[in-house]
Image 1 (cartoon, rainbow, N blue to C red):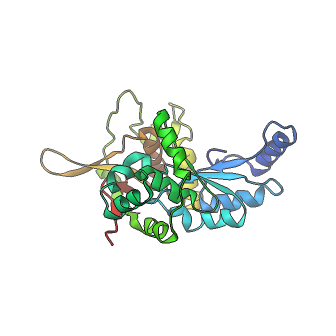
Image 2 (image 1 turned 180 degrees about the vertical axis):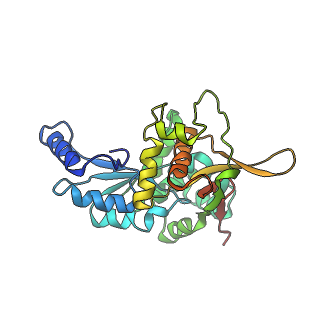
Image 3 (image 1 turned 120 degrees about the vertical axis):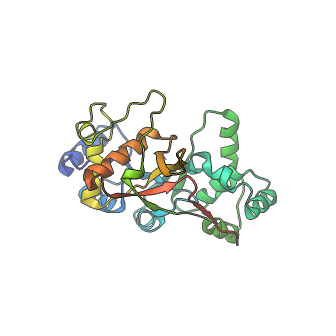
Length: 271
């Protein structure tokens, strides 16, 4: 179940999944992008149906799930599929010159990506989900399983990077045109969802209201010709950021501040 859907009745979901399992159409049932309150709720409502895995963002700079989701999954024998394990590649460029990272890579004769993937796989119940279209990168990723870091190295990696979350006024964010991607320009459009975005901004806004679910938006900081600072949506997952942007506005209004991660918000511990 790739997104929580507040509009779907739990009994309907329970009946459907139970039938799929009994008919042999599926062997396992998993979740994706669920917050901790949503995960707890659906675990209770699914009754006898086990949740095999949940896919959520997790890497050395985005460790929000360690507060509640990961301990809950360990207690309930649920595998965590960690997406964006390398921070969409941004982590590599940000920390490659760090002295401890360099020292560790030399020590284990590995690349930075192998070191970061190994840190993830060393943890209980964690399987990183790595996207690659390059066979050499694929082979490199697999070799991340071929070594074992000392406990102290993993601890230092865990404490090395943090991400600062800022509250940015909606009025300071400008929605740029990006290639041929269609985006909404008003709350009416976002509410009606004529481009059939899945999940829709309205569905995401219901989650925000019901469970106070907050997924920070990724922004890049800009300056105009007069030196005034403004913000654009990160282009890596432009439509994903657009959905979060409009969902927040539908839930909290155009005069609110939205939790944001800026492109320069990575905090690296030099100790």
